[in-house]
Image (cartoon, rainbow, N blue to C red; front, side, top):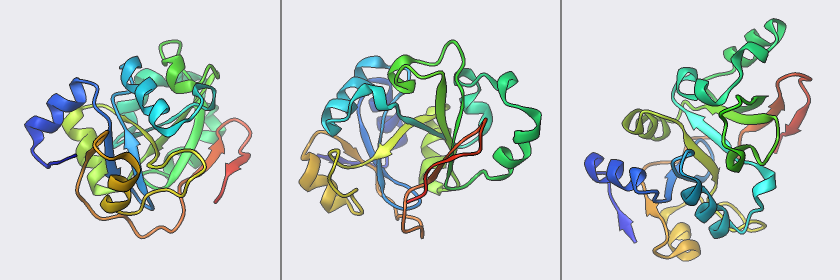
Length: 187
């Protein structure tokens, strides 16, 4: 298992399709380059998560996710609610662009997007100059990891652990449908 904060090394690992475990607002997340299909498929295999469930993209800014979102399809009357909820622990199911990878959307015409206020997530997205896949660091059905030790126990040497503190939240982000406002997940 590699634990590193070296920017050059992290960037090279990201570009090589490695999987990262990193702190978020409530739990550790697993992530990788959303544009590298094999990296995403490896992450899904590690979690034992079906591709059809889709994955969240987390970013520092909305502009980082624009290539994945059909921005013009977001209704004007919903935009204030969506954009004023960021940065923060709010994930929105937004209309996916035609270029959004199916291995991220799970084949849906929506894509899950969160603009994070967590400093480690923001730092990674700045370093990589793009969003990260973001899913809880656990095998599906198991509790999400809340420490580097739990990640070591669950994933041994299969991920790169990014040091940092969890945020103050006790539950993962709320997920809402951008067109209907329906709450999909409010743990």
